[in-house]
Image (cartoon, rainbow, N blue to C red; front, top):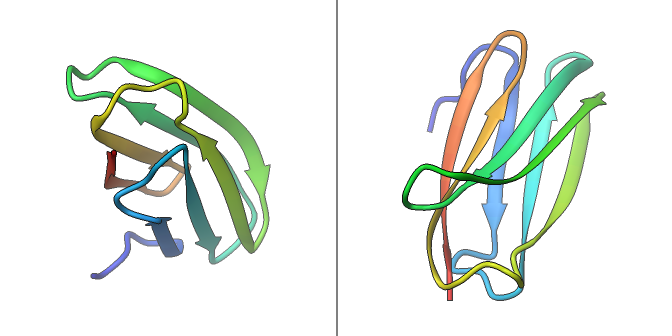
Length: 88
C-alpha cells in the first residue's frame, strides 16, 4: 500500500480487535495530527489531536463500543489516511 506524502506508515492492529486496537503512525517529519474513530453510521466516537515526531503508537480503547466495523482516520497538514478495523 502506498502511503500519502509525508506518511511513512499507518497501521492498525490487531484486526479484528477486542477491547483495544493499536494505531501505529510514522511520519517523515514532525506534524500536528488528528486521529479519529468513526462508527459504521459515520459518527465520530473518539478523537485524539496532538503533535508527533517520528514513530508513535496510540492505544485505542474500544471496550465501550459495540461490535462492528469502524474507520480510523488520520489527518495531518499534508495527508489523510483511513484504516478499517473490526471490533469483535
